[in-house]
Image 1 (spheres, helix red, strand yellow):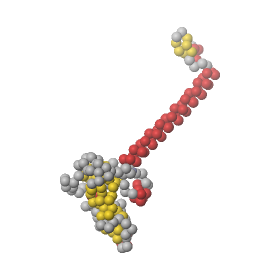
Image 2 (tube, rainbow, N blue to C red; image 1 turned 90 degrees about the horizontal axis):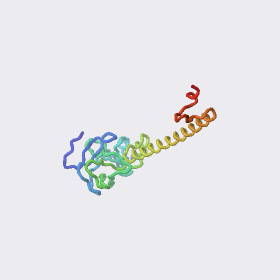
Image 3 (tube, rainbow, N blue to C red; image 1 turned 180 degrees about the vertical axis):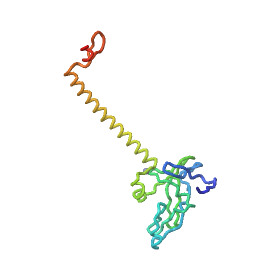
Image 4 (tube, helix red, strand yellow; image 1 turned 45 degrees about the horizontal axis):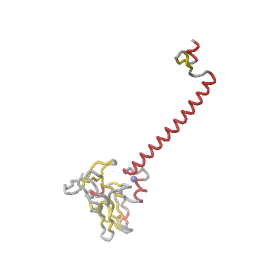
Length: 189
Ligand SMILES: [Zn+2]
């Protein structure tokens, strides 16, 4: 893990999906958190255009930042569909900064939206694990569970009704005799 000086308001830590970047100090909405940096790739140069990894940050049609370098701590920032930060892309300067779009509290994981292309290529196939999507999935699972329980209860009621009807035609299920319950069997003894 890279050494991170303590005056930075974040640290690398364990997140649900591996490693992530977490606030260690309050970060004000609108403030710059970290620069996303790495070698600049030129799409007009074939060998640079051929580079493929998960940390490519496209600045525009021509320039891309290869953020896979170890020193780029911003690469630890995970995607979220409801993030607390965003990427501030400056193609002319060929720079990207990650900026808070909410007040971030110490301990909060820092996230930004990676964008639709990344989402489609990397997250959709495996299912997005961001908090917002996990919450949605949890809710859907709970709803599905409730629906299954409802269907089961309905089926059970139906079965009981049917059983009750057959029992009723054979012999009354429960009859009170001298204050005691008995069923057909006991009655015969
Ligand atoms: Zn998500």
